[in-house]
Image 1 (tube, rainbow, N blue to C red):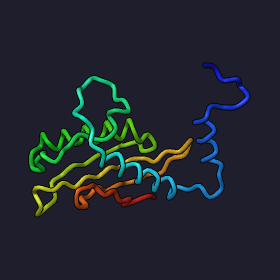
Image 2 (image 1 turned 90 degrees about the horizontal axis):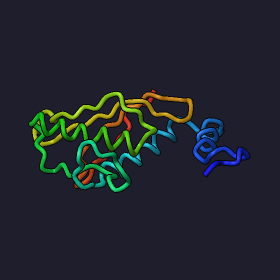
Image 3 (image 1 turned 45 degrees about the vertical axis):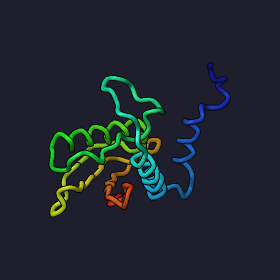
Image 4 (image 1 turned 60 degrees about the horizontal axis):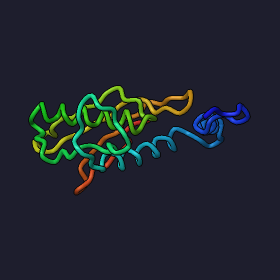
Length: 146
């Protein structure tokens, strides 16, 4: 289906509006991304097969409750899951770094950091999100936005 040239495609209009809208700022974008990360990372998907492109049926991450924080292979597996999910389902966060480490003094718990750039149209802001355990779910906090 071709577009008529009278109106730009929806996503172009939305990104232009976001860049030109008075009152639109990095805090609004950061909060929107934080909420999407909460939904994404607290949704469990079926195990993925490498090499197969992700679809909407892959939304979320695999159950990682059985992974051991002290095992390097388990931390690497979770890191790959997180990177794939964020890159595919939250493109406004362009990841530059993910850290998955056992918490000091709590060897069965993980500390997770997602660092990168929040992007909207032609604009970008650095951001750091920290993931912590909050009962049965992961909580996502915005640590820094310069």
